[in-house]
Length: 305
Ligand code: BEZ
Ligand code: FE
Image (cartoon, rainbow, N blue to C red):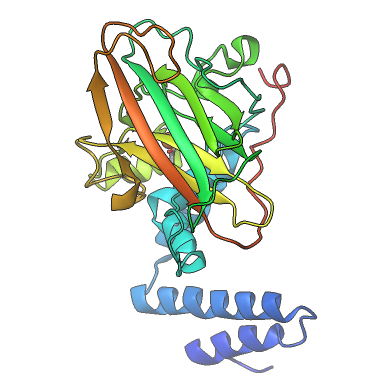
């Protein structure tokens, strides 16, 4: 029987994929094996450490539910999600910057009329009016484009994290479709910075390494127009204290939106305003191309308790 040295072992496993019918699968698996084997050699990984890693990944899988994606969270916290984003968006050519999808793109994003309040139940949040426009990179407005929006509330929680989600349904989550001038606008509350979920293995990793779990306040957007690259991004609230230390490394300067404090008696759609409110204005630029927009994590209300 042939006995392998440390490096011969790697070569043998790499060779074992030589006849894989799909060349991309072959490349991905061979490179994965080389990187994993390098890691084991470089760290002289002990049996205890290897067992810990297996147990950690097992618990990560066990923590997943139809609306809780612990593997996405782990990928985000390790910076892998932002690296995948970076290598896939090397040339922006004037298009809006992208960032992580995150684990809270869930359920149905119901289309709402322009101007709708997507957080009608929030009692304490500061009122926010968001006006955005979708154009191509040359500034031509794109009409009829669905824009999915979701954000944490002023208490730092997404709707799907709340125990009553299955019965109360979505909040701070909707779809708007751009008008002939590429515009959408809606009302909500100013989100606040929040900790990513830390009650699972990813939280254990964050705590045990002395990191903080916070994300700077932001609103998520998925903008998907036929003939253009789908845009997955956020707008961050300028001035947030975690902009320089986002736990998932997702901040880009261009995505920090100015949020102006306003006291005008009417909002931009001519309707009466509360005494104090905030205005966020942004223009998204889409790049010609193709691609499939992400699909929200599968759950229909009532299916999950
Ligand atoms: C989010 O922004 O929703 C998010 C992104 C990455 C990890 C956790 C949450
Ligand atoms: Fe978020």
